[in-house]
Length: 203
Image 1: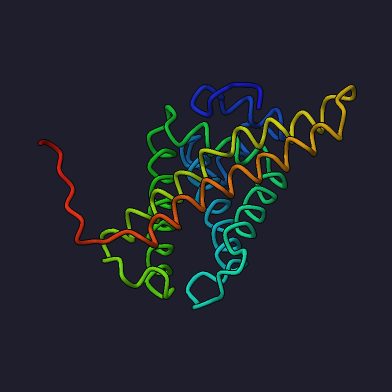
Image 2: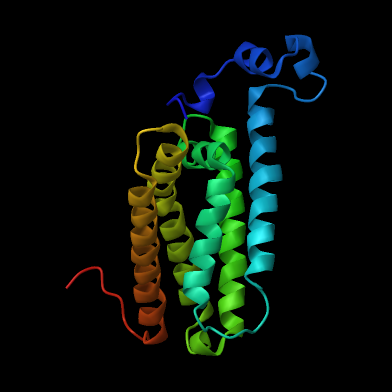
């Protein structure tokens, strides 16, 4: 949250913040890279599992306000763990290769579970497996693109005593509206998509 990348944080900084001696660190992790991987696997894995369970991923369900509900749930989960999501967004394309790989592996795994879920929903059975995978990846990437803007709103709300909370709430509702509309355009568009449609890279 201070703008420092994970790869630039030293082991001594971590142990000083936690209040332990550096040797205690090695009882749990081999190095900073293994700490970063653990943060991703344990936290992101658990968060995505909770999100999937809350959204009933893997089960046929009604789509009545499903898009709006899923976006609200996701962004409120981001609000609950702002430091962690800041870490994820910053390091997804950051300097630590092992952390970057761990994030990308979990994101791809989650995208595949979403693609499998779409195959269960009547609205997307007409799309082939390849296109459902592309749709799921587009959805996951779109969700991740909202995180920083949402964190800016929640961070300002928590740390600026002079801010008008009514303005923050209005901005939050506007963002929820815009995000929901973006997702609707993506998934409603997919509903009308034909997998037989040809994609040309050149005329």
